[in-house]
Length: 189
Image 1 (cartoon, one colour):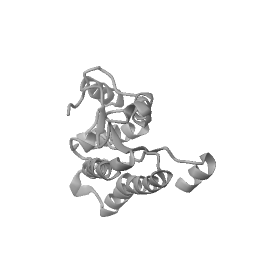
Image 2 (cartoon, rainbow, N blue to C red):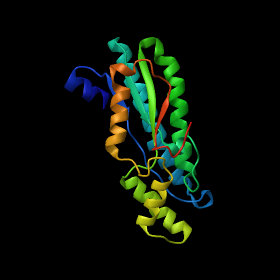
Image 3 (cartoon, rainbow, N blue to C red):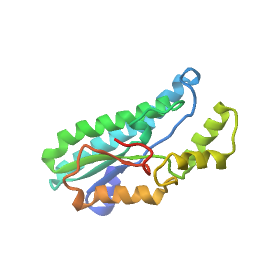
């Protein structure tokens, strides 16, 4: 992937490791194969992006931005999302460690930590919630999640893209090792 980007654009200045899958289930009902799959996508994929982007950026010698996908569930564990939460906590730890290693190369490493965002993934969470809680309508559950925010609504992908764009910008050169929350005030850190 990195080689293709460099071939097409002659360099790599920003890497966004935007990966995430989940499985909504109590711990006792979660198959080990699911654990391996989630950790492979959510953590190993981010690790590989960080590693190979860093190699390219160091070779180029002019710094860069590496950004990974964490989650609100990577700051506070969520019931029935134990493996997903663990994978996103791992991204935070990786981000902090790699930021320390790459800072001398003028490479910042950050993660973004979205809360409830109106995506297919939130549909999966809501379906799992309905399955394990004994019912409810999707609209009721979405309204409940929106009430959990200070702003009264769930976020959109465009709002997350704005945060990522800022972290990728030159203006964000002094921000590194952070997992920046974007959750409408549903969680404070």
